[in-house]
Length: 105
Image (cartoon, rainbow, N blue to C red; front, side, top):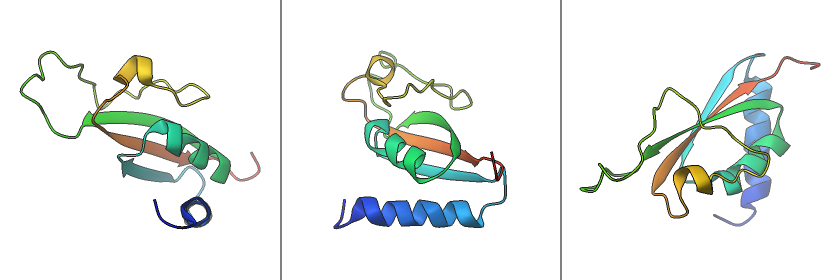
């Protein structure tokens, strides 16, 4: 959300990948929707990505809202669209669990 954010984020993710051992794990917890984050994670490094979500703030209507099992990742499609799963205006934290691939693979 700052000047050169994509360029700076790419540099940061490349550095994270550089220092991680093969099969090392990087965890990103953010408000950033998969629409904005997945392409950056996929373009920057060779990660296997699993996505988990939790609500930012529990609401009084929580019985009517969908809840997610934090231990079960949400299935990701190539476009990063989760609207059908989490809703259009979901108020969520997104947890991206990125596992570095083996070198040369």
